[in-house]
Image 1 (cartoon, rainbow, N blue to C red):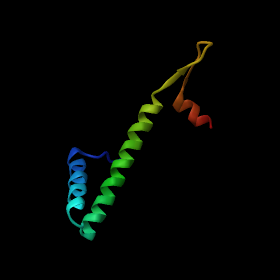
Image 2 (cartoon, rainbow, N blue to C red):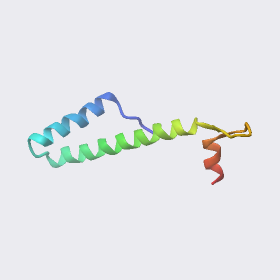
Image 3 (cartoon, rainbow, N blue to C red):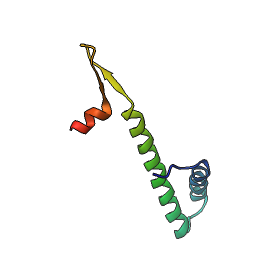
Image 4 (spheres, rainbow, N blue to C red):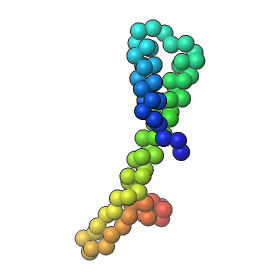
Length: 73
């Protein structure tokens, strides 16, 4: 999984600002869509990583990792 870089985020913002001032070219629109998809995928990947490291402690003292619980479903 390729994570998004600061330069790519800056380019997303640059294209957004440009789209507010004038029409983007087809190539720019395509680049914007690809960068947005990369950004969304990176956020999802990071969120899954965080969620997989969460553990739930039950009242009886047992601990269940969310990643283990998801594998059983």
